[in-house]
Length: 359
Image 1 (cartoon, rainbow, N blue to C red):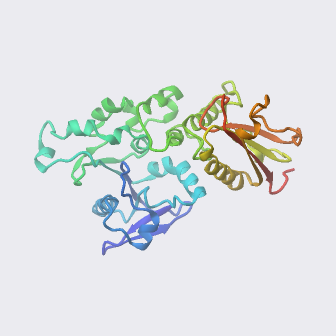
Image 2: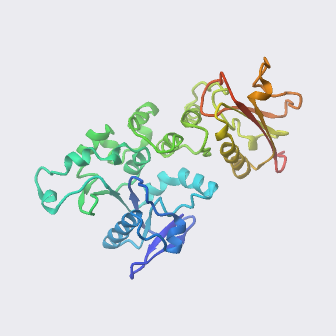
Image 3: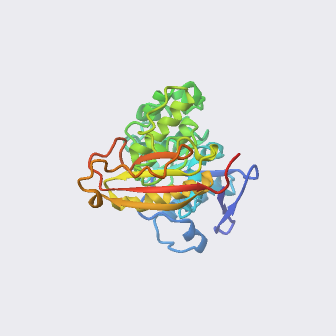
């Protein structure tokens, strides 16, 4: 885990911690804007005029006032250029918020003066209830996971904490008060927890599923480019497996079932069926990373076939099966869909081989 150390002179220095060696820290919850600060910009201290620096400075000053030396901010404490680190961070994020000594919610669309804070019926409450923060996918876990959550307006004035505002938050989110007060997630079934995410949005379509991993205690690899429905299908399959419900139709549950590393396959073959060929390259790259980093398989061959090459072929888009054996793992993956593609433009055949055959 990477934290920002707040120096007495105001400097911020990135530090890395592992295992149980993580000090007490405060954590920031916010909605992303167009000028967020990256890890590389913190390391070099550049682009100080970006609006994202103001949120980082706010978090550092508030943490210092509360006696914390370290803070965590999602925009700059993760190297998002590293796909493996990003996947690990997203799978760990619920726990990181849960373990934070305090969570500061910075609401950029709520602005108040001192007289509003002291008013018996706060003038800021309508803006609070309508804040974009309550409609974002990632902020669901950021609200539920930490035990101590404090809300601040755009100019840093404190609005209250989760307990003081519990009734308003319940009315806004429909999340039970017991959950907001720390009740165990296992007390609530899958469907009820799914309802808490209703009406929320994420910038990247896959994040609508990935932002729920911590809510359900699920860990799974990230495949940006697979589309919202495929990501939600994989999440649903993991949930079905956990509660021993009937297994889903594997032709509709894309990518990596069963996990290749658990079987002595000769090779794994992933066929991506797509009508959006411009998305194939990034999807292939992400799938290759998953095979290599999580399953210890090496992608050696990729074959792109376009519709123009098979126009009029009655068996299109299914690939040639002459080199497929019983010992091979076969996966059919529908990019951006959960159904057979009626009018595909192309498919990508990926073949991956284990680094070391398992006994």
